[in-house]
Length: 114
Length: 108
Image 1 (cartoon, each protein chain N blue to C red):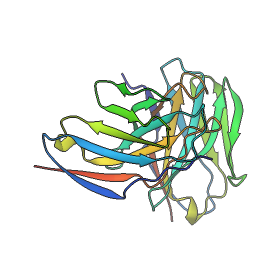
Image 2 (image 1 turned 45 degrees about the vertical axis):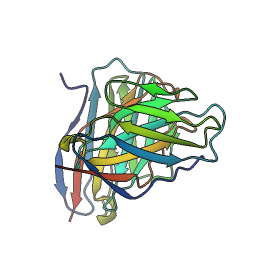
Image 3 (image 1 turned 180 degrees about the horizontal axis):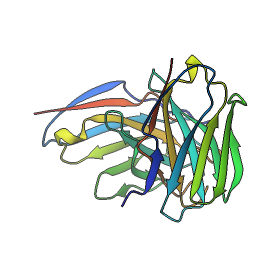
């Protein structure tokens, strides 16, 4: 059973397009996250939702908009894609936002913008 | 934010213990130390975490110094499948801030 799943696994698109990445967790967790890993391999948090409420919003361009329709899903919509958006995007979840609980990561979505 | 310092890389012989050091001298009293690893380009995998006491689970042991300014992750019997980037992270402000980590290569 997949705990945290993401679709699609690979996404190739052209500059200026709008695209979405979907994330689902079947762990019953309250908190979900989006991370970006760029070509230099640094993992940076972008957003975090707890019980469908946004709790972390790092300095991310407003072209990126997360949406949480329910606790089990956190989708990432990206408008007007740019070359610099090319990266691997990871979704994660944890039982709660408290520091005592570990995060479980999805397999990642490799986004390539041409 | 509490920052961590790790060696950029280290080698380990298969079957031997791998000891991965981490410095976190600015850690606050209520902040946890977490260890994750990332194998190739997979999603990061949780290994272990602790606050003050030493911790052990089926994957590894975590030794935290008494002043909490440093810690060591111990993989007791490294295998080739343990080759990965290992991240030591201080959990702060409800988030994990990943650094560059230590690239561990286990050699046969």
